[in-house]
Length: 281
View 1 (cartoon, rainbow, N blue to C red):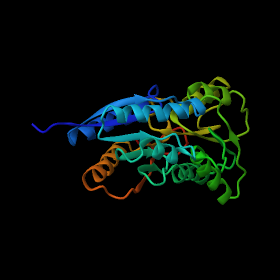
View 2: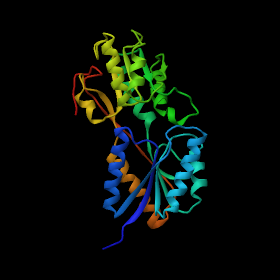
View 3: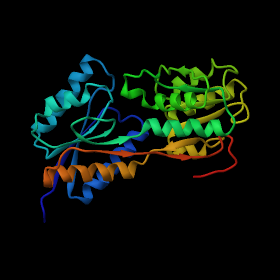
View 4: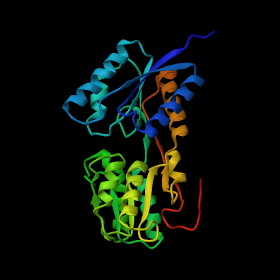
């Protein structure tokens, strides 16, 4: 029997189901190629200590003798250089989610995804559309979702407004929604967890979805289809990401190929929360 290889996986968040789904798909694809995965978790807060922790976790995985590294990126501008300096060419690296120059990786086109989600709401007749998530700081890769929203609003001559969620999970969306009143007729949320909190907060405030406010999420977690109303959301292509990650890793391991970035897009799943007269599960 052929000996199994080992790939190190470094992520920064395993508490949310979306990340668990991603790791599960990576496990499946790695197993198909006769690789096992060794998982490490770095701090999920971008600070000096967490940056050092990411470097430490990379070094520890290399010390364990892994054949390659799969790194779930944070999205800060210095990340690519930080990874390259930590690895120093000892093993091949493939990243996923955010761009990493000079490294092979899978990039989710959040700008295009959130442009499309915002445009969908505009085409439904909405003009007062808010965004709940990180703001549109043009120097931050993490704000790519907000940039997509911003571009759509500008292209259609509409006024944008960012509502920076203090907590990326459900509570942040809930608290933000309780303070909105009738400012908006539609909301684009950074993820489904935020959207679920928003829906609850709006309901408690007597605001009807989608009659008064349309809501769109991101991630298409399982519960999204079973909310009342069912949540319109961007479906992350987890299976395609995992397959492309392994393809890039095999390129590095077998042919020492030049680094390249593969761009993937999410699919808008239109359900009831946006007010469109169609349902898709």
